[in-house]
Image (cartoon, rainbow, N blue to C red):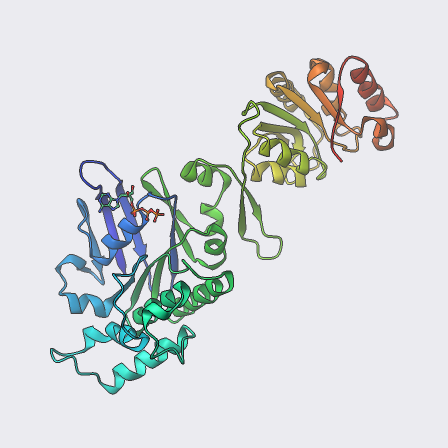
Length: 399
Ligand SMILES: Nc1ncnc2c1ncn2[C@@H]1O[C@H](COP(=O)(O)OP(=O)(O)OP(=O)(O)O)[C@@H](O)[C@H]1O
């Protein structure tokens, strides 16, 4: 196992991170995520034994990495840097052959095993036929694959890669990540720094998300939540469970903070009728709340994904007195209340009745003229909506 124990680091007097623990296991594809400048590359260099932590230790197979001779370390661990070293115009073959140096004697004589390993590594990254091309004649993506091939030729048990999908088109990113996943399946420990949360969610067995100088650790569905992403990046994102794959997928929300920003908008929804409105209001910069909603209703799920405040009830339960009181409190705090085109029946009538306690000027109703078509309360809901319109509520402009 490759283990970082209680790692502390900072450049100069500034502290970058403290108390970091990380365990990279054979047979596992692990990914480090986090915002620019969080310390991902720094941590990777410490784990590779290229940087000394200010405190804490790194152990590889029970030995302190900084105490291992360079060749012994290179047989155990291969490192693919983000910006490969200053380019010298070596051929692809010679560059990949450099990965074999821990196996060569002082004379650097190449053996059959070296030849075989280099050929296989070049094939694996899809660069057969490029052996005699020189690095400067390659595209950024092709060069990236050469450096991955060099790490593969090293035949190490641990491979650490810093943004290995940089420069690659989407499909090559997926090919390289599949390749790394396959290596892990063969028993290698792979640890990569990535920026793409969705690809990490799809491929990684274990995630390490940098957040305020610490790591949030776990599987994708534990780590990639709205709250964790917001904490780490200070930006909101829509986090939804992929309907087929069952993994979190993330869509950053570009919030328009120009329009007054951070207004509080409460949305009366249910049955998926409010999803679009919640997303729209959130994008316009509002802090949103919703309810009363039954847990697991599709609007409840959207609200969760958006990090909204939710007044909630158990599935299939009617609105209790307690929830009604909570709803009134939230409605009082709201700058604006939007009523989605939800069918109203006895189970959710209280959501409409509560509007009678709200200043009508701040109420916006979607398609109020069609209220009677979605009214299953014998006309009570329509009566309330019409009264609100008379008192100053407006139509919400939703096409
Ligand atoms: N040699 C150095 N001397 C001083 N500061 C450094 C040095 N290397 C990195 N830093 C600083 O340390 C912080 C962390 O850098 P690091 O490269 O580890 O971040 P990162 O998470 O990999 O970022 P990115 O996503 O942008 O690649 C940054 O603020 C960076 O400017």
